[in-house]
Amino acid sequence: MAVRPVLRMGDERLLRISQPVQRFDTPELHALIADMQDTMQALNGAGLAAPQIGVPLRVVIFGIEANPRYPDAEPVPQTVLINPVITPLDAAMEEGWEGCLSVPGMRGLVPRYLRLRYQGCDARGAVIDRTVENFHARVVQHECDHLDGVLYPMRILDLRNFGFTEELFPGQKIEDD
Image (cartoon, rainbow, N blue to C red; front, side, top):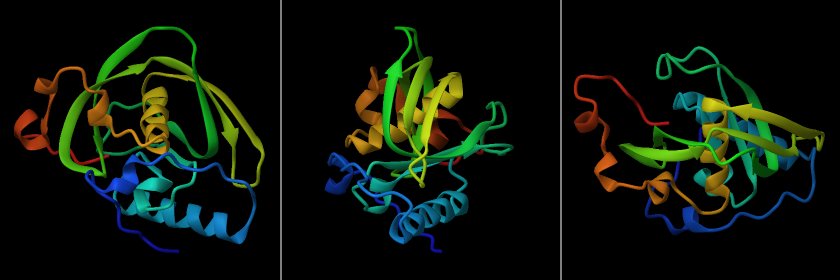
């Protein structure tokens, strides 16, 4: 379909709460998802939320197999998740470095739940119900935050752990998520 422009931090549309999808398996929904997939692939992202391309719907996509940007990351299945609900399975959290296509060139150390259950639907309305941990859990939380108008810098506990990628990781080739 098409690679869409990604909104950047400062655009007020990224701060809005997205609306639930009411109708599944429609040409419009499939076109949105195709554009999101094209955009994510073109930018080598691990995930993308509809609000990042200016669509205020509760739709996220994510997935990673072998990606040079995430050499140590476990595989995460390619997923379309609509109207997600996240439930932490315990209080255990871990800080990890995150970046975002909407916050280009920067990284921050963000606390996230280690284990969670996420539920929602796919593009046809079939139920998705998974229990995940570690990197998979981090990716889901990051993408779903976008649906509630939350960008990862808002979750950073110590702003000394936020900065430009090239300054934080000199000599390393790290791109935006």
